[in-house]
Length: 601
Image (cartoon, rainbow, N blue to C red):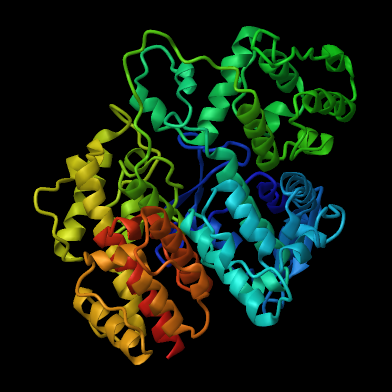
C-alpha cells in the first residue's frame, strides 16, 4: 500500500468543486501537480479515500503523517489556524518562495509610486509583505497595475489612516479584486489587516496572475495565431487557457531544438528548456531600436543543477526578465512561480509574427462578456473561465452557478463529468449537460428561456448564452436582497422604491423612475445614494453636477463605482455602464447598494 505521506507529495485535493460539497459521487478527479490544466490527464481516486484524507482524521498517526509530509516540503512554512474556531489542530502552509517572489515583484513594479514610499521596498526575507498589505493602499495599486483604471485613485485613503479609513481601503481592494475576477469569498478585510499569510499570498497571486495573463489571448495579441497547429481552427486556439497558450508558445520555440515540455514543473528542473527558449526569443538586432542580445549557452554544461539555474537567470536578466523565480524555484519545479516567469518572458519577448495573407479578424471581448466572466470567476467556479463561450460549452460552470442561486443540481445522475471521452471529445455528453442546464432554468429556476436549447449553449451562441448567464447573475443578486429582507421577494420595483425612499429621507434631490432613466448617466443618483447610506462619505467637490460633459460623466461614474465598493458593495458594473445607462448593470449597481444599506440599517 502506498505510504500516505508519499501520496500527499504527489496529489493535491480540490474540495471546492461542487461535487465535494455534501454530495458523494463514486469518484472525484484530482489533477496532478505541475500540469497547468491537467484536463484529460487526471488521476482518479476513490471518493471514500479522498474524504478520509480531507476530513478530520481520527487516526492520530495518520494525521501526524499527513502534517509531517506537508511541513517537510522545502520552502513551506506551517502556521496555526487563523480563527479562534479553526486554530486548534489546524495548519495553513505558506510558501517562503512565493513570499520572496511576490515581495520582489511588487517592490520592482511599484517602486516609483509615491504613495507606497512608506512600505517599499519590501524585505522579501521577512513578513514585511503582509504588513505592507495591511492598510489596503498597496493592494489597490497592485489591482490597478494588473487591470488599469479599475480603482479611481481619488477614493483611496492615503494619509493619516485610522482603523475606519483602513477598513474602507480594504473594502475597496477586496470588492475591486472581486470585480476583476478574483475569488475573495473566504477573505475578509480583518484577515488582510491582520496580515494572515496564506490569505494575503492567495489574493496577491490572483491579482498578479490576472495582470500577467492580460495579453495572452488572441484578441489582444494576434501574433498568437502563429501557434496554430496544422488543421486547427482559429476558434479552437481562442478556447485555450493562458496556461495552455504559454505551454504551446514554449514548445513552438523549442521545436527548432527538437525539445518539448508538457509542464512548468518537472520538465524545466534541469534548465535546458529555458536556455534554449532564451536563445530563440532573444532580440536578434533586426528590429529597429532593439539591440541584439547574445545568450551565453555555456551554463548548459554546468553539472550542478542549482548553479546551472543561476547561470540561466543571469541570461534572463539580460532580457529584463529575472522575475518570480530563484535558482531553487527552478530546480524544485515550483509550478506557480515558473508559470509567472514564463508569462514574463512571453510578455516582454514573444518573438512571434502574425501569419501573412490571413483573411480573418479577431473580435475582442465585449464589456458584457468581461463582466459576466469576472462575476463567474469571483464565485470560485471550476474550471476558471477564460473564454466565456468555450468554457461554458460543457455546462459544468453553469450548473455550479445554479447551485449558487439555490437551485439543486443532480450531480450523481444527470451530469456527465470531465474528462469527456468519445467521438468529437464527448460532444454528446456535453450537449446532454447543456440540455440539463436549460431544463433546470425553465423548470426549477423559472427563467425565461424561450428559444434557447442545449445545442445553443454547446455551440456558444453569444446572444442566447449571455441571456442565460444574465438571468443567473440577476437571480444571484436578488437572492442576496431576499436573504437580507427576510424572504421578501425582490424585484425592480422594490429596488427602485427603496432607493427613492432612502434618497428622500436623506434630503437628496435625486430620484428616478426606471433603470433606463437618463439622469443615471450623470451618476448623481448613485453618488447621492452612497452618501445617504454612509453620510459624508462622498466628496462632492470631486463631482461635476451642472451640465456635465461626456468626460465629466465618465469621471463621475468612475468615482461612483469605486465609492460603492469602498463602502462595502460588491459591484460588478463598470463606469461605462452608468454613462450609457445599461439597465441590466444599473439594476445590479442599485441592488448591491440596497443590500449594503439594508445591512447597515
